[in-house]
Structures are given as C-alpha cells and as structure tokens.
Length: 106
Image (cartoon, rainbow, N blue to C red; front, side):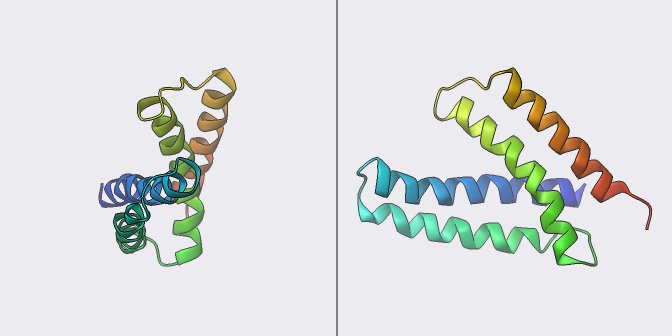
C-alpha cells in the first residue's frame, strides 16, 4: 500500500511541477509559477524514496507506467480533453507492465 501511495503522490507532484513550467513557457504565465513547480518536482523525487524496492532503477521503471496513467488523467481532468481508446489501451498495457515489474518473483 505504501508503494501505491508513493507512486500516486509522486505522479501528482511531477505532473503539477512539469505543468508549472509548461504554463510559464507555453501559456505565458508569470515566472512565479516556477517556484511551486520546483518545489513540486522536489516533492516528486522525495516521494519515490518511499517505494518498497531495493533498486532505484526498478522503482523508477515501474513508476513510468503510473506516470502515463496519471498524465492521461491530468489531460482529462485539468485540460478537459478526454482520452481516446488508444490512450486507454496504452495505459492498460503500461499498467500490466508495472504489475509485472512490481509483483514479479525475485
């Protein structure tokens, strides 16, 4: 449960932090958007340390699928663009990969 919570929190923090930079550069928002963006990205890195894994690379690889799912959720909820069937299919494939990486016998 701690790993799932860490991944969800990290995804929200990373996407919010990256969006702050996107907003500054692409949406002409104030440079002040970068301060909370950088704090959010630092929080993202910190939260990944709570993933139950002996290898950072494995934790980051599994996180990639969670990030993809969270990004498409952001697309829908924040940007108002509904993911299409290809987006949903891709997310399912990625989450199956995450499950294999996390739950595989070692």
